[in-house]
Image 1 (cartoon, rainbow, N blue to C red):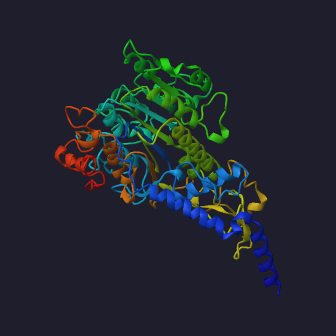
Image 2: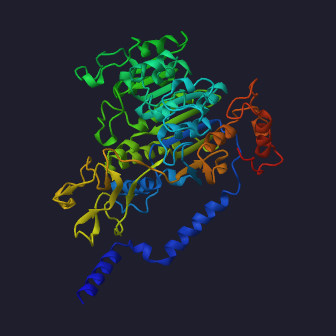
Length: 536
């Protein structure tokens, strides 16, 4: 009898959480019909040339993270959350990306970055090189370098930019410009002597040497640009933030010297300097706002540290001045860091901030000439569940206790990580700690100092010219081939005729122009706008 009464009370409680309009079947039918009308309108495909391409990369932003961020975004506006629409949710085309590295079932961010930026899969820990390169072995690099869509765009006359919340020589941005057998070779200080002797260059060095005319670079990583033991401008007394370079070079000064005298190049290290710039007079911008990675969004100083949204707005205003268009890589990189630390609150707020940046880019561009792609490099062993009722705080408790140890648990949990807690031989009672704290480490099943990546597929959201080519389930390295195809970064025909082709093919299939021409004929010919391209 007591069990039946409890069940009745739970059911009554859940029923009271349902918004009144949702109790009427008409609400759901009309909503579905409107969605159907929008879907039918997509049958007229956008086959325009993509003058601009924006790639938003949520590092570690697996599907559970997207869902939880959606709920958080809604709850930050005092809504239930589940019904909220993220900016990326509005994109009409969605696909899945297979994230494995050539030598890893569960990938890392370097091998995946090589895939979605350079168009080829690679070994874990390597950047901008093929799978013929062995991690940490410099002598396997030569001849196995692969170029990225950022370089293809630059060769096509476009402006290019990199914006990240990590250091600018971290895994994701590095694959856009570097060729390295090891993602951890941030400066020459982190390289083994034999690698330097064999001629390999550190990643920070390559940022300024490989593609010297990148118009916009914003993120963290100041300390890798200055001679060893140089005090940091913002934290002069912090030894861990001092310069690291053994070659004695000041890469910021070297960057300035490479710029044409008739162009205006600006280096800034704080938000105040950034916001004072007259962007109409800025040709090149480097903003390094922290010695290492940028601070979490929840901890950000609104006066001294720019948000990801603000950096994206500045980048777009500079890049949009090029009549031939631009390519912009935007990374919400600290989603990944929050998860690794088991700090779901930090991770999800990072994801919400990246979604704001996506919204700002949407306002500043047009789907008629701008292809925007949102995806992740990999997932995490992050989950949320526990039969939580509608509107349950995303960082709150499940509505019941464990039927084994009789203790409460949070809805958010990790498969492994630093949140594993055993007290007196039993799982920690979360009601005795502040599980809503920004740095609370959610409980995990397996103890580890750092939580690991997950191996499942991640989502790809796309809108704009040729976005329909991102559909179904794809290998991750397919993504830059679509972006290059949409933007005519190669010898082209059909819808690309308005732009004179480069003298030599540029892009992922430069070595096989005949094949690429056959691909382009599939969708670029005026007579067959709906023909599908051959597999890449």
